[in-house]
Image (cartoon, rainbow, N blue to C red; front, side, top):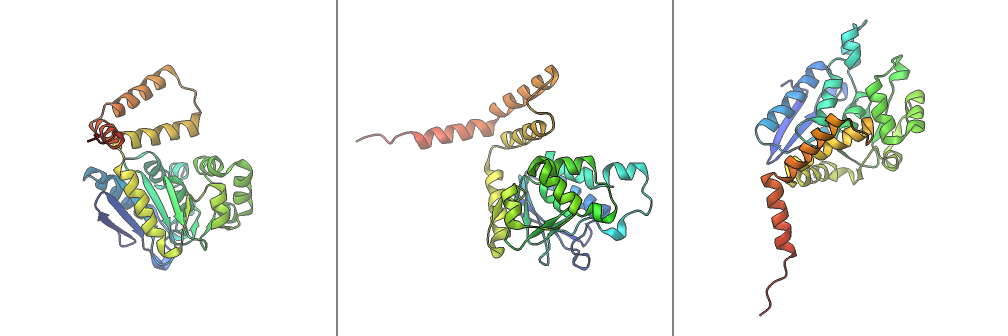
Length: 259
Protein backbone atom coordinates (compact mmCIF):
# COMPACT_ATOMS: atom_id res chain seq x y z
CA UNK A 1 0.00 0.00 0.00
CA UNK A 2 1.69 3.27 -1.04
CA UNK A 3 1.81 6.03 1.56
CA UNK A 4 -0.48 8.13 -0.67
CA UNK A 5 -3.40 5.90 0.35
CA UNK A 6 -4.59 5.07 3.85
CA UNK A 7 -7.16 2.41 4.69
CA UNK A 8 -9.11 1.89 7.91
CA UNK A 9 -11.75 -0.68 8.78
CA UNK A 10 -14.75 0.30 10.89
CA UNK A 11 -16.83 -2.82 11.27
CA UNK A 12 -18.51 -3.53 7.94
CA UNK A 13 -17.21 -0.31 6.36
CA UNK A 14 -13.83 0.28 4.72
CA UNK A 15 -12.65 3.91 4.78
CA UNK A 16 -9.98 4.77 2.20
CA UNK A 17 -8.26 8.17 2.31
CA UNK A 18 -6.23 9.76 -0.48
CA UNK A 19 -3.31 11.39 1.32
CA UNK A 20 -0.79 12.53 -1.30
CA UNK A 21 -0.82 16.03 0.19
CA UNK A 22 2.12 17.38 -1.80
CA UNK A 23 0.14 16.70 -5.02
CA UNK A 24 -3.33 17.66 -3.70
CA UNK A 25 -4.19 13.93 -3.48
CA UNK A 26 -3.62 13.39 -7.20
CA UNK A 27 -3.53 9.73 -8.23
CA UNK A 28 -1.40 7.64 -10.54
CA UNK A 29 -1.56 4.01 -11.62
CA UNK A 30 0.24 2.83 -8.47
CA UNK A 31 -2.33 4.50 -6.21
CA UNK A 32 -5.21 3.27 -8.36
CA UNK A 33 -3.94 -0.31 -8.20
CA UNK A 34 -3.64 0.03 -4.43
CA UNK A 35 -7.24 1.29 -4.26
CA UNK A 36 -8.42 -1.69 -6.30
CA UNK A 37 -6.53 -4.02 -3.99
CA UNK A 38 -7.92 -2.38 -0.85
CA UNK A 39 -11.52 -2.75 -2.05
CA UNK A 40 -11.13 -6.36 -3.15
CA UNK A 41 -9.25 -7.32 0.01
CA UNK A 42 -11.87 -5.69 2.23
CA UNK A 43 -14.69 -7.46 0.38
CA UNK A 44 -12.88 -10.79 0.76
CA UNK A 45 -12.60 -10.22 4.52
CA UNK A 46 -16.24 -9.36 5.10
CA UNK A 47 -16.60 -5.62 4.43
CA UNK A 48 -19.97 -4.65 2.99
CA UNK A 49 -19.46 -0.99 1.97
CA UNK A 50 -16.68 1.54 1.46
CA UNK A 51 -16.12 5.28 1.89
CA UNK A 52 -13.56 7.22 -0.14
CA UNK A 53 -12.29 10.56 1.15
CA UNK A 54 -9.29 12.87 0.93
CA UNK A 55 -6.91 14.32 3.51
CA UNK A 56 -5.92 17.96 3.81
CA UNK A 57 -9.18 19.54 2.72
CA UNK A 58 -9.02 18.14 -0.83
CA UNK A 59 -10.77 15.07 -2.19
CA UNK A 60 -8.63 14.41 -5.27
CA UNK A 61 -7.04 16.78 -7.80
CA UNK A 62 -7.22 14.18 -10.56
CA UNK A 63 -4.59 12.14 -12.34
CA UNK A 64 -1.08 13.30 -11.45
CA UNK A 65 0.15 15.25 -14.48
CA UNK A 66 3.74 14.25 -13.64
CA UNK A 67 2.75 10.61 -14.11
CA UNK A 68 1.09 11.06 -17.51
CA UNK A 69 3.02 9.48 -20.38
CA UNK A 70 4.54 11.94 -22.89
CA UNK A 71 3.28 9.81 -25.76
CA UNK A 72 0.77 7.23 -24.50
CA UNK A 73 0.46 3.95 -26.35
CA UNK A 74 -2.95 2.78 -27.50
CA UNK A 75 -3.43 0.39 -24.58
CA UNK A 76 -2.79 3.14 -22.00
CA UNK A 77 -5.04 5.56 -23.85
CA UNK A 78 -7.95 3.11 -23.99
CA UNK A 79 -8.33 3.08 -20.23
CA UNK A 80 -6.13 5.99 -19.11
CA UNK A 81 -3.87 3.50 -17.42
CA UNK A 82 -5.63 1.95 -14.42
CA UNK A 83 -8.30 4.66 -14.17
CA UNK A 84 -11.08 2.94 -16.13
CA UNK A 85 -10.53 -0.36 -14.34
CA UNK A 86 -10.77 1.46 -11.00
CA UNK A 87 -13.96 3.28 -11.98
CA UNK A 88 -15.53 0.02 -13.17
CA UNK A 89 -14.67 -1.62 -9.85
CA UNK A 90 -16.34 1.23 -7.96
CA UNK A 91 -19.49 1.02 -10.08
CA UNK A 92 -19.82 -2.72 -10.48
CA UNK A 93 -17.59 -4.26 -7.83
CA UNK A 94 -18.30 -6.05 -4.53
CA UNK A 95 -18.81 -2.99 -2.30
CA UNK A 96 -21.32 -0.14 -2.54
CA UNK A 97 -19.36 3.09 -2.12
CA UNK A 98 -19.80 6.63 -0.80
CA UNK A 99 -17.51 9.53 -1.71
CA UNK A 100 -16.92 11.97 1.17
CA UNK A 101 -15.88 15.14 -0.61
CA UNK A 102 -13.76 16.97 1.92
CA UNK A 103 -12.73 19.44 -0.78
CA UNK A 104 -12.24 19.83 -4.52
CA UNK A 105 -12.82 16.90 -6.88
CA UNK A 106 -11.17 17.58 -10.23
CA UNK A 107 -10.85 15.54 -13.40
CA UNK A 108 -10.18 11.92 -12.51
CA UNK A 109 -10.98 12.85 -8.91
CA UNK A 110 -14.48 13.86 -9.96
CA UNK A 111 -14.82 10.70 -12.01
CA UNK A 112 -13.88 8.61 -8.98
CA UNK A 113 -16.55 10.42 -6.97
CA UNK A 114 -19.17 10.03 -9.71
CA UNK A 115 -18.47 6.30 -9.91
CA UNK A 116 -19.41 5.92 -6.24
CA UNK A 117 -23.04 5.20 -5.46
CA UNK A 118 -23.47 8.31 -3.30
CA UNK A 119 -21.56 11.57 -2.79
CA UNK A 120 -21.53 13.78 0.31
CA UNK A 121 -20.04 17.29 0.24
CA UNK A 122 -20.09 20.67 1.98
CA UNK A 123 -20.98 24.00 0.42
CA UNK A 124 -17.38 25.09 -0.30
CA UNK A 125 -16.54 22.07 -2.43
CA UNK A 126 -15.75 22.67 -6.11
CA UNK A 127 -15.92 20.11 -8.92
CA UNK A 128 -14.29 20.49 -12.32
CA UNK A 129 -13.56 18.58 -15.52
CA UNK A 130 -10.47 20.23 -17.10
CA UNK A 131 -9.22 17.72 -19.75
CA UNK A 132 -9.96 20.02 -22.71
CA UNK A 133 -7.93 22.77 -21.04
CA UNK A 134 -5.01 20.31 -20.95
CA UNK A 135 -5.38 19.33 -24.60
CA UNK A 136 -6.92 15.95 -23.77
CA UNK A 137 -9.97 14.37 -25.38
CA UNK A 138 -11.46 12.47 -22.48
CA UNK A 139 -12.56 8.85 -22.55
CA UNK A 140 -15.95 7.92 -23.97
CA UNK A 141 -16.78 6.22 -20.66
CA UNK A 142 -15.97 9.34 -18.66
CA UNK A 143 -18.01 11.65 -20.88
CA UNK A 144 -20.91 9.19 -20.87
CA UNK A 145 -20.92 9.00 -17.08
CA UNK A 146 -20.99 12.79 -16.73
CA UNK A 147 -23.73 13.22 -19.36
CA UNK A 148 -25.82 10.45 -17.78
CA UNK A 149 -25.78 12.13 -14.37
CA UNK A 150 -26.24 15.78 -15.30
CA UNK A 151 -27.53 15.76 -18.90
CA UNK A 152 -25.78 16.29 -22.22
CA UNK A 153 -26.16 20.08 -22.26
CA UNK A 154 -24.53 20.58 -18.85
CA UNK A 155 -21.87 17.98 -19.62
CA UNK A 156 -20.92 19.97 -22.74
CA UNK A 157 -20.59 23.11 -20.63
CA UNK A 158 -18.52 21.44 -17.92
CA UNK A 159 -16.19 19.76 -20.42
CA UNK A 160 -15.81 22.45 -23.09
CA UNK A 161 -15.47 25.42 -20.74
CA UNK A 162 -13.57 23.43 -18.08
CA UNK A 163 -14.77 25.83 -15.39
CA UNK A 164 -15.27 24.85 -11.73
CA UNK A 165 -18.78 24.26 -10.46
CA UNK A 166 -19.86 24.97 -6.89
CA UNK A 167 -21.32 22.35 -4.59
CA UNK A 168 -24.84 23.77 -4.50
CA UNK A 169 -25.09 23.80 -8.32
CA UNK A 170 -23.58 20.30 -8.44
CA UNK A 171 -26.18 19.17 -5.91
CA UNK A 172 -29.03 20.53 -8.04
CA UNK A 173 -27.64 18.63 -11.04
CA UNK A 174 -27.41 15.36 -9.14
CA UNK A 175 -23.61 15.24 -9.07
CA UNK A 176 -23.73 15.49 -5.26
CA UNK A 177 -26.20 13.44 -3.20
CA UNK A 178 -26.10 15.22 0.18
CA UNK A 179 -24.89 18.67 1.27
CA UNK A 180 -23.91 18.92 4.94
CA UNK A 181 -21.68 21.08 7.14
CA UNK A 182 -17.98 20.56 6.47
CA UNK A 183 -17.34 18.91 9.83
CA UNK A 184 -20.07 16.35 9.15
CA UNK A 185 -19.05 15.18 5.67
CA UNK A 186 -17.12 12.06 6.68
CA UNK A 187 -19.52 11.06 9.46
CA UNK A 188 -22.50 11.41 7.11
CA UNK A 189 -20.76 9.37 4.42
CA UNK A 190 -19.94 6.63 6.93
CA UNK A 191 -23.54 6.59 8.16
CA UNK A 192 -24.83 6.19 4.60
CA UNK A 193 -22.30 3.40 4.01
CA UNK A 194 -23.45 1.64 7.19
CA UNK A 195 -27.06 1.86 6.02
CA UNK A 196 -26.17 0.22 2.69
CA UNK A 197 -24.06 -2.37 4.51
CA UNK A 198 -27.06 -3.28 6.68
CA UNK A 199 -29.26 -4.12 3.69
CA UNK A 200 -29.38 -7.69 2.31
CA UNK A 201 -26.18 -7.93 0.30
CA UNK A 202 -27.54 -9.79 -2.77
CA UNK A 203 -30.27 -7.15 -3.16
CA UNK A 204 -27.77 -4.27 -2.91
CA UNK A 205 -25.36 -5.74 -5.44
CA UNK A 206 -28.14 -6.87 -7.78
CA UNK A 207 -29.83 -3.47 -7.73
CA UNK A 208 -26.52 -1.73 -8.48
CA UNK A 209 -26.03 -4.07 -11.41
CA UNK A 210 -29.50 -3.36 -12.79
CA UNK A 211 -28.99 0.40 -12.48
CA UNK A 212 -25.75 0.16 -14.45
CA UNK A 213 -27.50 -1.89 -17.13
CA UNK A 214 -30.32 0.66 -17.41
CA UNK A 215 -27.88 3.56 -17.69
CA UNK A 216 -25.98 1.82 -20.45
CA UNK A 217 -28.67 0.00 -22.40
CA UNK A 218 -32.09 1.12 -21.19
CA UNK A 219 -34.78 -1.45 -20.32
CA UNK A 220 -34.28 -3.47 -23.51
CA UNK A 221 -32.86 -6.93 -22.90
CA UNK A 222 -31.74 -9.78 -25.09
CA UNK A 223 -33.23 -13.14 -24.21
CA UNK A 224 -29.94 -14.18 -22.61
CA UNK A 225 -29.74 -10.97 -20.56
CA UNK A 226 -33.35 -11.32 -19.45
CA UNK A 227 -32.69 -14.84 -18.15
CA UNK A 228 -29.48 -13.75 -16.44
CA UNK A 229 -31.15 -10.84 -14.68
CA UNK A 230 -34.14 -12.99 -13.72
CA UNK A 231 -31.76 -15.49 -12.14
CA UNK A 232 -30.07 -12.65 -10.26
CA UNK A 233 -33.40 -11.41 -8.88
CA UNK A 234 -34.47 -14.92 -7.92
CA UNK A 235 -31.15 -15.62 -6.14
CA UNK A 236 -31.54 -12.41 -4.14
CA UNK A 237 -35.16 -13.21 -3.27
CA UNK A 238 -34.20 -16.66 -2.00
CA UNK A 239 -31.07 -15.61 -0.09
CA UNK A 240 -30.98 -16.15 3.68
CA UNK A 241 -30.47 -12.42 4.23
CA UNK A 242 -33.63 -11.64 2.27
CA UNK A 243 -35.69 -14.22 4.21
CA UNK A 244 -34.44 -12.75 7.49
CA UNK A 245 -35.19 -9.18 6.39
CA UNK A 246 -38.75 -10.03 5.36
CA UNK A 247 -39.39 -11.95 8.57
CA UNK A 248 -38.09 -9.05 10.65
CA UNK A 249 -40.40 -6.70 8.79
CA UNK A 250 -43.38 -9.01 9.41
CA UNK A 251 -42.54 -9.10 13.11
CA UNK A 252 -42.38 -5.31 13.30
CA UNK A 253 -45.77 -4.99 11.62
CA UNK A 254 -47.46 -7.61 13.76
CA UNK A 255 -49.77 -6.06 16.30
CA UNK A 256 -49.17 -6.99 19.94
CA UNK A 257 -51.65 -9.46 21.37
CA UNK A 258 -54.50 -7.89 23.28
CA UNK A 259 -54.98 -8.79 26.92
